[in-house]
Image 1 (cartoon, helix red, strand yellow):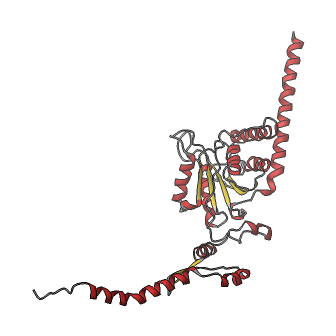
Image 2 (cartoon, one colour; image 1 turned 30 degrees about the vertical axis):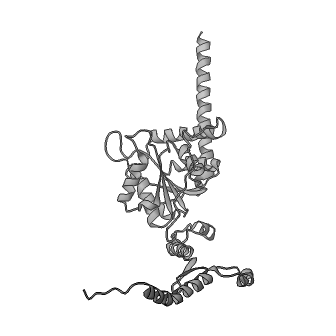
Image 3 (tube, one colour; image 1 turned 45 degrees about the vertical axis):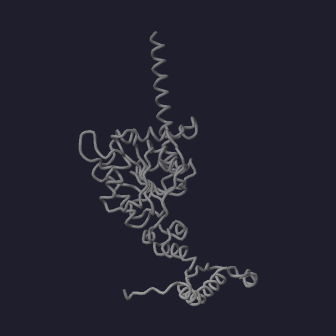
Length: 316
């Protein structure tokens, strides 16, 4: 009986050791596969059109503000001010009417002077996996900068890689409260579970929903002052606000209006069609001729009417 107990004990120890080694090995895989795409601070974050901000509770269980939440919003606002992103996708949990992470983030970013047109809300970001799947498949994001804590970024980037979403990490550093042992242990287990989600049991998002579109980027330009900027990252720089306005004005001005004639003339006639156009009667010219003929005939019509109608006397 004693041998059986000892054998069972050693079996349990062996399984625990194997499990621990597996967790350590998977963590090393996740970290090594993503560490070179994580910036050291928000000032060195690369530019992308979209910044994905991961939601979390704004308050702590024991009361007070969650420093990790505040750090994420501070970093997101800083990316906007530095012109590193053109749209902030705020993704979080809104499973009940009394808990709304995206709206809370939106409200607090507005308090940080981020205009509402630069923010898009995703109410079904129930997890890191759900947030990234929906960003890629629902909102059509192909490239993004991920905004969250440094210890969370490896797992988020690893998921993005598996989904085909090209991403870089921008760390939201919570200086007031570094991650404790309990939080890091949870993250180590989550990284290992993520590998299983992606490559073993084919995890699906809780809610995918119909496709949605992000607003057209309107930032003037991304900052080129950060050290990591290079010629290869220039493709991520958005067009200037002035260029966007000019382009829009050009599209609206395509049908120019001739003030003198009051005739709408379309610009941009193909050169090869000019000869054919010259042989084709211009309907606007015909209309002008008919109008001129009508105006020229009005005096004669007026004279005929005066002769036919009785003359009114105002001497009574």
